Length: 52
Picture 1 (tube, helix red, strand yellow):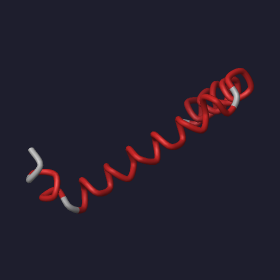
Picture 2: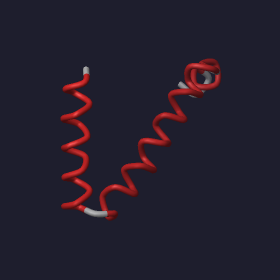
Picture 3: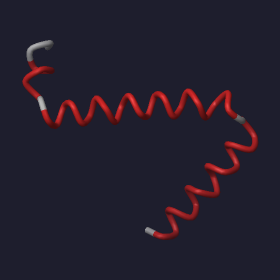
């Protein structure tokens, strides 16, 4: 698990240096929205079941 964390950190740092904030800022927004929807799904599944 430590090796995976280390490799992920290295790859993430390279992406930040090469792509800059054009890539990272939208990625942070998208991941935040996905995590918020996941939490809503876990806490209130009936809200989403009524949509489908």
